[in-house]
Image (cartoon, rainbow, N blue to C red; front, side, top):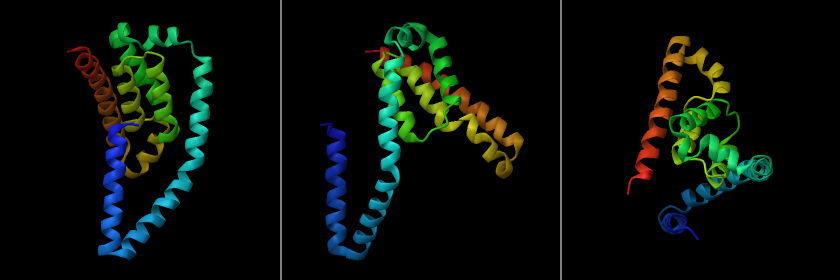
Length: 163
């Protein structure tokens, strides 16, 4: 099992155990909140895992590697960032999809650009932002966020390639 996961689980358990002795009502409230979040997210997690598994059957890893692989360079990072713009799902959909891209040998930079663009821009969410922040701010923020996804993808590709 993943060391980071195990460490986080151990620290969380220690936190709950400590809180149970110091403020039992807070520990109970935290567990109740955790249970609610779990059951709210569970359907998304299940559907997303099945969707990622299904999508993996439709995409040839060689094609993904050619379009988004290490040899694709800036083009792969740009394609990854553009794919992120189209993202409409929850994090439970995006992360399994990103894991599928990694398994299909997409470059780390392309996956970074995909996730960053999806999280920071996602065109489907922009109309919800405009009424609150205005068109000018939304366009500038989205453009800079998209550029950040691309620059970050290039940096990640360079950093991961370096020894």
